[in-house]
Length: 116
Length: 113
Image (cartoon, rainbow over all chains, first blue to last red; front, side, top):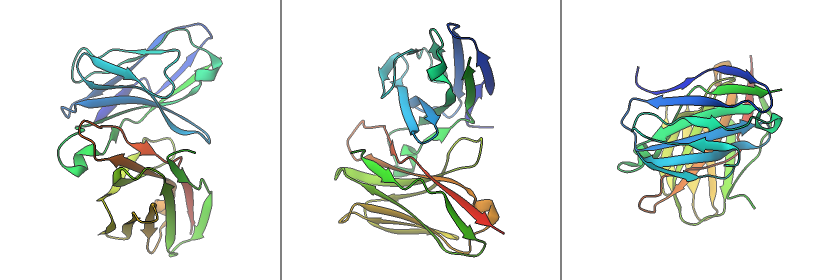
């Protein structure tokens, strides 16, 4: 099925541990991004990429790292987990250019992360 | 001031009611307007999109944009319990190479049977 696949769906980490959240899309989307969603805060952009080899910071990048070696994959790394990083993380992608409908994001189903 | 403001609700309506969800925005450069629906414990999904001003209708859903007042609306007719979700508005400017959407925080809607 075409779409955005996120793994894992759930994760519990201890403070100080590191981990990578995986995101893959099979729609040949140019643009990919990571958001965190917290109650009352809405979606906040962490990092984004406009193509393989190109990444940039969003609104809340501290404590996170990304890379994009292929069009399909955009992993998010937590360097040293902190309780403040407890959140739901969403990966989103889009064509970014072309028809107006192509500007819309396709979201993954999310990763629920708890840091204790 | 955040660029897109959205009342978080929650909004509770009886089944069959007409629902009006709204956002205001401040950036005159926004040209594309979208509504996303997010069910509990799921990712947002694109529901409607419009370009510039005017209305767009899709079944029970109507998206409306008034650029003069910088106001975005989503109307749901004959609301159903399955419409219970959080609705997020999103906007985008028309700049070339501008990929990013600006989201509202979302309005949580409950449709009571």
